[in-house]
Image (cartoon, rainbow, N blue to C red; front, side):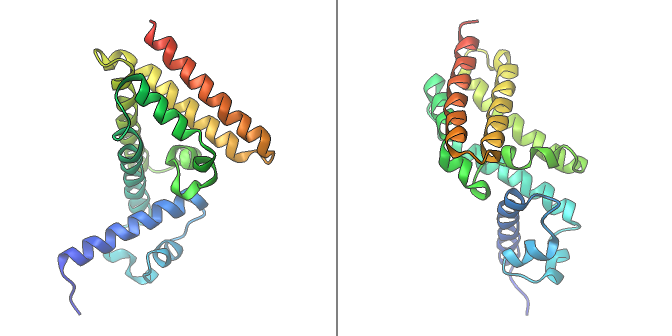
Length: 195
């Protein structure tokens, strides 16, 4: 049976989306092709009709996750400092911490992305730069390039704090860390705004 081109593209997108969730939950190394395809409701044998390799799917899924994060958080946030504060408070929420598969690809996958293939690292880098530029445009609307390094530091602080909060078994301490993360991030952006 022959499917329309649109069906193949929709199926490919379903694979990418479900793979992104699985990769964030189980990691790149912990997610085999058979499992990734099963999540999409397909057999492992159909994988190569959509992707050249697992690395190709991983790079594509990372790019998709970064685009989705930008569309969900940055693109919808208010302009200026108010928008940055909105992003920070959303990011450091217990819900964001507790739903890894629906949360930030930075906090879920950074350690593995650092050891991944160049195409995966490049897909991540591109997505991170889009996020950073969105932060910088809110931090210094008249001169976003001047705020790029601070925005990079903000992303690093946010991802690292969320990772640590997820790793702690002491729920009270994990919640306190998120609250401190908000204070630290707001202090960082206020310091940049006064420079």
